[in-house]
Amino acid sequence: MSFSHLGLSEKVLAAVAATGYKEPTPIQDQAIPHVLAHRDVLGIAQTGTGKTAAFTLPMLMLLEQGRARARMPRTLILEPTRELAAQVDESFAKYGANHKLNVALLIGGVSFGDQDFKLTRGVDVLIATPGRLLDHFERGRLLLTGVELLVIDEADRMLDMGFIPDIERICKLVPFTRQTLFFTATMPPEIQRITEQFLHNPVRVEVARPATTLATTAQFLVKSGREDFDKRDMLRRLIRSAEGLKNAIIFCNRKRDVATLYRSLKRHGFSVQALHGDMDQPARMAALDQFRKDEVTLLVASDVAARGLDIVDVSHIYNFDVPFHADDYVHRIGRTGRAGRSGTAITLVCGSNDAKAVAAIEKLIGRTIPYMDAPDGAGAASESGAAAPRSNGGRHHGDRRAERHRSHGGATRQPQRPAGSVARIEEARTRRMPQPPARGRNDDGDAAHLPAFLLRPVPVKA
Ligand code: AMP
Image (cartoon, rainbow, N blue to C red):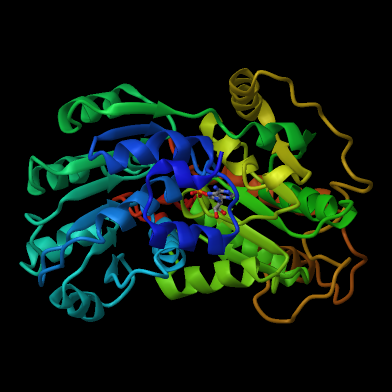
């Protein structure tokens, strides 16, 4: 079945043909006719199903009539993260090549002035993260009473990030009569409540997770030592021994761990970039761009920053941490094995909490993930990274501690110590420190959260 039966205009069909898509995906097939008929749509679909085009293509056609007025956007798309918002912006540029539409992006980390200037020119499509949108609204720079169509994308992610109160507020600021398209991968009770409150007699369109993800990705667990430097050592060995590794995303649960792991890998001579919510927007976009263009091989990322990103061809996924939520595992490994290509996903497992989280994942995906043997020598290397080139600067505190330990003994040159000795120093140190509380969710959001410095362990006097 081609796109032509969906009721899209010639202009939109020409743009679709230019992208090379031959036929609509199931979500496009089911949703587009209803969007064109001005119905509210509740789409249960995750990234990778083609849902962006499912709302972008009919929106383009609906926007062919009418004009935008200053500060009164005609349509509004809400996205949980800046990256997803930027990705939707790119989709409008691609699919809207034959339309003269003003598209504005309101995301954090970018100057208000430029965004404000765009709003004054009149905006056909406003793509925003909730916080920045409300900032503009509160400054009186934006009126939402002209919104004819509202898209709420990745609603369950909005819930995870604490954006639901913002969403409720925005829904009350746009006209009651607008059309609403609501997309979510899952339907927790809070999301169900929102849909009942703000959608009018919606058409429910549900598509399965892309089956290819699980079918074409080889998944393994590997046992690792509990300490971070054990895990970093294991990860390096896994990467070095990986067959056919073209590029890889390495997921951490916390953004501060993303930063630490990134520095460590860089010091060990790997070609690596980082992506987490504390980086400013230009740095995030630059990191992503480098990874997409194959200028770096590894991307260390947090879930929120990487969620839904359209990176087509990733050969390996490493879960440096087992995700807190089983659903995140599916999202993470969904970055590989795309479009029928094969991929490999390896998860480092240490301790009983990890084992519990793995059991939840296995229940969700309906299969057992086998353990693989640790690559040779895992656990035997020091964190000083003798096996790979490294720069002199930016040494890790683990190295410095080991060095202090050596110099304390009065020797200027010591044989290289196995990780165990560093481990003992680290262990003695951690015994003296209160540990950060276990956290219920990943902490990398644009939502309000405890600043990372409050979560860092603090040395206490014995
Ligand atoms: P999304 O779920 O919107 O993030 O889309 C995932 C990927 O599917 C993107 O790379 C799109 O360019 C691609 N895509 C969307 N629609 C189609 C289609 N009908 N045929 C082939 N690829 C598509």
